[in-house]
Amino acid sequence: MTFPTKNKKLLDWVDEITALCEPEEVYFCNGSEEEFNQLAQQLVEKGTFKRLSDAKRPNSYWAHSDPKDVARVEGRTFICSEREEDAGPTNNWSDPAEMKSTMTNLYRGSMRGRTMYVIPFMMGPVGSPFSLVGVEITDSAYVVCNMRIMATMGAPVLEALGEDGDFVHSLHSVGSPLAEGQDDVAWPCNPDNIFISHFPETREIWSFGSGYGGNALLGKKCLALRIASVMARDEGWLAEHMLLLKLTSPRGEVHYVTGAFPSACGKTNLAMLVPTLPGWKVETLGDDICWLRVGEDGRLWGLNPEAGFFGVAPGTSYSTNPSAMETFTSNTIFTNTALTADGDVWWEGMDGERPDNLTDWTGKPYDPDSGKPAAHPNARFTVSAAQCPQIAAEWQDPRGVPISAMLFGGRRRTLAPLVTEAYSWEHGVFLGSTMASETTAAAVGAVGNLRRDPFAMLPFCGYHMADYFGHWLKFAERKDLKLPRVYLVNWFRKDENNRFIWPGYGENSRVLAWIVDRLEGRADAQETPLGLVPKAGELDLDGVALAPGATKDSLFAIDRADLLAEVEAIASHYAQFGDRLPARLAEELSALRARAQV
Ligand code: OXD
Ligand code: MN
Image: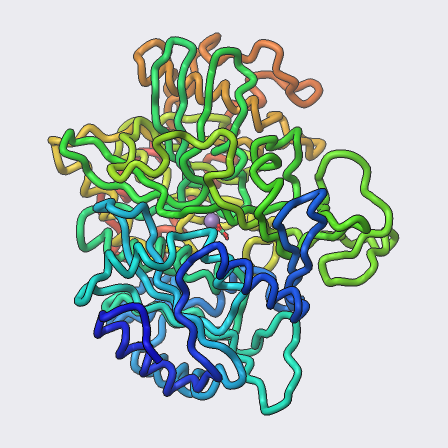
């Protein structure tokens, strides 16, 4: 067999994995449209994909997974650093040699009866100093089709790799070998043996047993966050779970803003916001991941390393996110949505009435009396970012864009005000390190429980969380830097009747406008124990439909008992880090305690 590369490391690795996994054949992906179409057709023939109606959604496909393989599995995600203490208390750790031996046994013969695909991919635009090259070996054509949307694939990557270039070795198997003559299932997986393992020192990823996006599209969470965060620590940059948007004010001022929010907390909606405030404009650069490097001008420059969106479908509609709706009108893969009788997709929260005769996400006729949703709450769309009608022209600028402000947020029904400005970068790091949010369906487990999710990186930080806090703090030591301002936002406060107080979505432009006014030195703020909030009259609330009876106070009041409870909750969150917690954060906590007790 001849392969389209002379890169010895790659050729040796392909040989090694072929010998280990024993696939029926090996196929080197070139990333072309023709290849995508062929693989999609094979997936249709196998029953993994159903082609949607070309009249409704041209060139689009629907897949539904095994019901046991619907989300990221944090309990089976491992950081296998050489020293246990480097994984820290928030990650699962396993000794790298032991993990490799366990997984080598699982991989042995795991691709029998299947094709092994070799996917050279790049996260970040071709020619950017930010970009990273990986090669994913997988036995899933579904993964290949999704990777083609989410990353640059094929010839330009092999060219960048050259004969001696290195790459992140990213190995994936669904762990479901086929015996001679055995029929395949539509969604092969091995849910009882899932491992999503990362080897930070050797920059390797080994994933087994799951075909679900976050576990199987290894360029995304595994490379661009967990492995990249370790590289960023070693090289002085940041790899973050953040959206990236461009904001233009009616005066023509341009500011680039990032936002760290946990999974399924509205990053895609915020990135594609359509402002209700006249004259404001938002353009999208990314909805999930941002890499930030110090530029020659001392500012932080951010870049979205992904080429596509792998977004949560339920709740997306023309009223919540019209741009997303327009983005996936064609050339999209939908996974675990419901299917309509006329060959289109549907999910809870879509505009209009629920159509009759749906097929639910498990592939069965939907029973509206079942009390269950027709689409899985973590149903996803995979679509190229270039299709977004409000994508910013510079979204693939190899230099990235200079960041003015960073937002941190989560779902909190109480305490956290609509918007709070950090007193300093260090206070911003304190706010990020203590972020809390109610859990969502993006990961396997209970939904709606408040958990600390520092910087929205709890499931994605590839090393000790306290060292990660220290890494963020280090930026403040460099006096030559012009760091972005940091804001904590909360769109999700609820009243005593459990109704959201703030309408969110396009109305969030009012918060963005206040932030720009602060950056431009036009708006005043007032001190609170948690940070700076808009002074009376500074946040434009004219005509906003708050929950009945609610006022500005309902969005900003800080309940004393809640605050004192928060101080103690932060103290116990910090306690898990022992003396590895940076002293500056302990000081910030003492300062908050003092402010809370006044
Ligand atoms: C995602 C996630 O898929 O955070 O982006 O789970
Ligand atoms: Mn995410």
